[in-house]
Image (cartoon, rainbow, N blue to C red; front, side, top):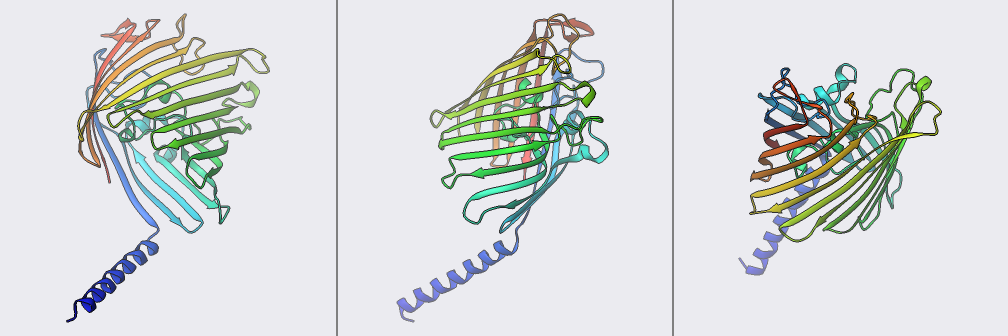
Amino acid sequence: MNSNIASLLAALSSFGLQAQTDTVKKANPLKISGYIETYYAYDFGQPENNTRPAFLYSYNRHNEVNLNLGFIKAAYEKDNVRANLALMTGTYSNANLAAEEGVLKNIYEANAGVKLSNTQNLWVDAGIFSSHIGFESAIGKDCWNLTRSIPAENSPYYESGVKISYTSNNGKWFLSGLVLNGWQRIQRVDGNKTLAFGHQLTYKPNTKITLNSSSFIGNDKPDDSKQMRYFHNLYGQFQLNEKWGVTTGFDIGVEQKGTGSESYNCWYSPILVAKYKVTDKIDIAARGEYYSDKNQVIIATGTPNGFQTYGYSVNLDYNFYDNVVWRIEARNLSSKDEIFTDDNELSRQNFAMVTALAISF
């Protein structure tokens, strides 16, 4: 056979296989994925109820092998329509969604959206979402540190409502406006008829820099005891070179001292995280954080100085495969008041070791 004819037949065959593959892809807009993260945490304060401090919602069980988060997710996207449904279980959902009713505790994500423009990336979505606030999420493998920071644990992980979002054609700008049911709420508090609002603005001038501004405005109490809350989160992520990455952030919030009050209680939290890639499989990250909530708006302690706590942690990650990571972390928390326990005695310090294995599929 002439070599030119053979080459042409080979090209046509390759084109046919590719066309079949593309047809299958187009015919299957539904994608199924999942995530499982098991862990073991040892709190050297040895809490009697085997539960770590109440302001920690992830990896919060002491001296037992457990599941922090496991979920199965179905994602659908075709033409101008998209939807996501993820059902979860684990100690994270038990702790962080304790205020939600019944099976709502098991919903990680449930939303649907419609594209509003044929020429611009403009969407409106409604339902239950991951929070628009902060650079950390409940999915451990997506975070530089094994455990979540104090500001991440004490600002919304999830939210429900409707949002309109726009992504620029070059992918550098993302802007969204949100109408929400409250501060980390699927169901609003009984007696609360006040909708909440938020925004998110993200700028990525290149692949190495991400700058983000997010906000929340609303009331999370019944209307007869209404106290408006105003919160802002700012962070930047910087990939300095192939080895080093740095994330820095600052949260600040204020809430009315009482219904109709012109005075406000304030809380704030700066954080700095550094990550170093030792090899293709090994990463090291360190975190420093401070959380000041003297008036106990978010974290109640019942002590004279409220919650004023420093935190330091170091973790080592080993990436077996792209979708499998084993991690170990040492973390110390130090507070101005004796808000922790150590063998049933009050203490200003809390030290813990945590290890986790995360698999995504």
